[in-house]
Length: 210
Image 1 (spheres, helix red, strand yellow):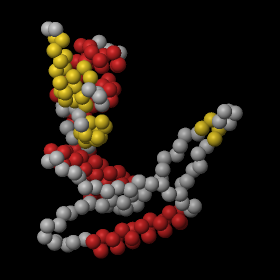
Image 2 (spheres, rainbow, N blue to C red):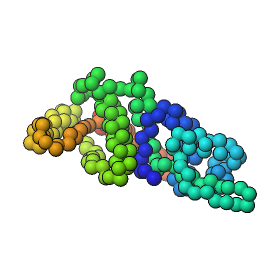
Image 3 (cartoon, rainbow, N blue to C red):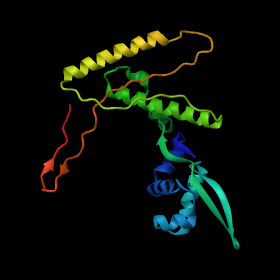
Image 4 (cartoon, rainbow, N blue to C red):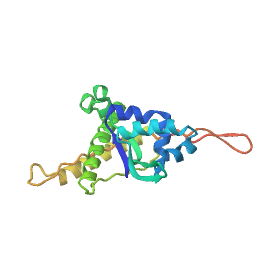
C-alpha cells in the first residue's frame, strides 16, 4: 500500500471523486469486505459491491484475500494507497503549462509548477515502487512572518541569489553519469485562519499578514 498514489487516468479520477467511493476508499485504509463496509457507510451490501467493482476496475482498490463462508466466497479488499492526488494529466487538454507563464512573481506560474510537480513525482513514485527502489527527494516546509512588503521583497531577492549560487556551485553541465534534478522554490501567503469565538462570546481574529 502506497502512502500517496497519483491518479492520471481520467476515468479513475472521475470514479474517485464520487462521494460514496471517496468514503469507501477512506474506510479501506484497512482491509474490509462489502458486508463490513455496508455497515460503516450505511448502504446495502449490493450497492457497496457496485462501487467496489468500479474502484477495483480502475485500480484504486485491490484484492487482499478471499474467505470461504459456507457456499459464499467473501472478498476482502484494500485501497491501493492511504491518500490520493489527481494529476493534471487527467485533464491533459486543459492542464497548466509552466512554459506558458515563466514569471517568478506569477501565482499562476506557481500553480503550473505545482501541477507539474504532482505529475512528475507521481510517475517517479510509481516507477520506484515497481522497481522496489527508494526515491531520493528533499523538501522544506515552514512559515515566516514579514513585517513589511519591502522585507518580503528583500527576502525573495536574497533567497533567489542564494539558490542561484548553490546551483552554480553544484551543477554538473554534461558530466558522465549525472542525474538531472528539478528544483522549485516557492513563497506564498499563508491562508487566513477563520475567526474564533471565545467562551465569553467575543470574536478573536487571527493576525493577518499581507
